[in-house]
Image 1 (cartoon, rainbow over the protein chains, first blue to last red):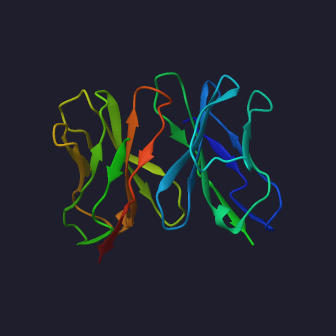
Image 2 (cartoon, helix red, strand yellow):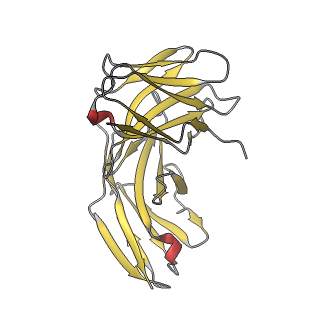
Length: 112
Length: 115
C-alpha cells in the first residue's frame, strides 16, 4: 500500500536554529499538507499546498514557517528560527484531487 | 467556523466490553467526511473508520462502528469486544469536500482498556 514517508522520525534542535522537516508524498498526489500536534493537544492544520503555492495557511503558520516542493518528490516544512514552543509532532499529508488525505507517521521535533 | 468537539477527555472500559466515544461537530457544509483516528503512544495517526455525510448507512469496520446523526451533527464511535491493544488516544475529525479539504480535529479522548 502506498504511504507518505516523513524523515527524520525524531529531530532535536537548539533554539534559534533552522530546521527542515521532510516528507515524500504518495507519487500521484497533488495536494499537500502540514499539521502540528503539541504534546497532549489536538492536531492542528498549518498549511495546504497545491500547484507550487500555498492554498491556505492557519494563524500558526507565521513568517518563520515556509514550505517548498524542491523537486518532484519531496515536500518540506522549514522553521527558520526555532522556539521552544515549536516542539511538537509534525504530520505531513497528501491526497489526489477529490480524495481523502493519507497521513505520514510524523516527525517529533524537540527544541532545546 | 467549523469545529469538532469531543466532550470525554478520558474513558476506560473492561476488556471484552463495549465502549462508545462521543463526537459532535458544527458546520454549514452539506458534503463532508467524518473520521475517527487512533493515536497510540508512538503518536502515529491510524485511520479507524470514516463516514461520508451523504451516506445514511453507518460505517462499520470489524469491531468498530459509528452512529452518524447528520441532523444532530453527532458522530460517535462504538468499539465492541474491547481489546488491550485498543488503548490509545482517539481523535474525531471532519473534512469538508470543498475548499482545501483540510482536516479539523477534536481534542481527543484517551481510552484505556482494562484487563
